[in-house]
Image (cartoon, rainbow, N blue to C red; front, side, top):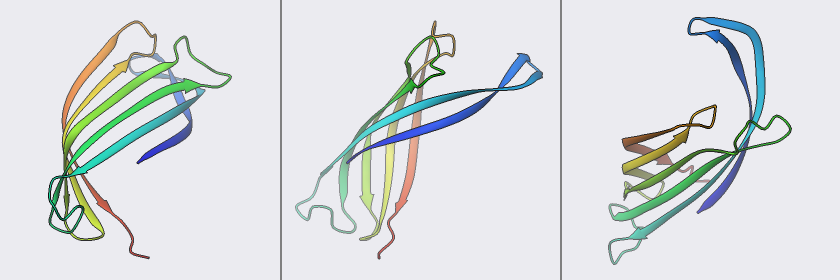
Length: 123
């Protein structure tokens, strides 16, 4: 599975730690996600089976209000997916986020345990 998401955001400008400037900065972000599942049973993706889940999502700035850098963050995921039934999946595992600060001069590296429930409508 892979998908592209385009975002337009307005961020409040800040004068200092507790005072907003009363203005906003508009910016655009592109997110590209690749997500792969590998079944760990002979039944494939049947209900009550487990699969290996791998994902990578990159966030990039774009557009006329481009900041001083293009890269925003990268999210790398490794975990498992459990097929609860034919419509629902529970995905859980380790998420690593590498994020560049707004000035583009430093990086923050976060390690997170993540659990997500996917519910697919059965139309």
